[in-house]
Image (tube, rainbow, N blue to C red; front, side):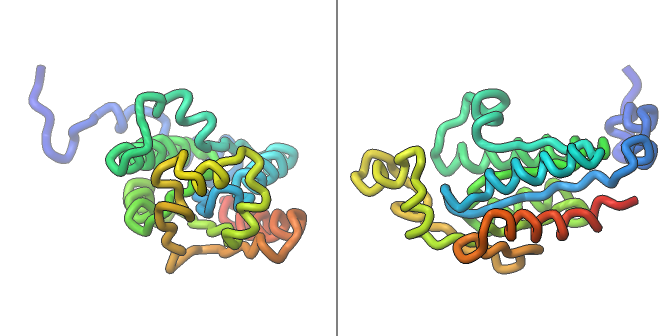
Length: 202
């Protein structure tokens, strides 16, 4: 096997269809919308609404969240600090591939620390990474608590639960902050759509 040069470790990338042509085919720019916020903040509901809007308007988008990631590529991971780090690393790598294919990738993950969000940004690249903070007060998230997770965390049945027994660091430099505690779902979704549409134009 011929030795690969330092600048050509993966020569297959010189042979596949490049990103520009894939984006031209889809008539959109591939980006990553990384939505962060407490459990129950409404980020996944908004992500679902955004994906549906984009689909209905002729755009190819894909939603990644805990339900479809932890039952598949991350099914071997738990919730230790090491596993949370690896969870975000894998998600970011997948998102990077999607974006390079021209797909609008919408991610909905608590990603509670600046370190984890910076990890994702560095992997995906700042040109494609768009951080959206769904800012919903803890008391509002607890009232929603459709899965009963906060109640279990308060009883000590769930360890290291973000917002209760583990910290959530508010993003310092989010590209968009949605005040979901005071605004209606429709208002929040409209704000999110208005943020995304200019970014996916070629």
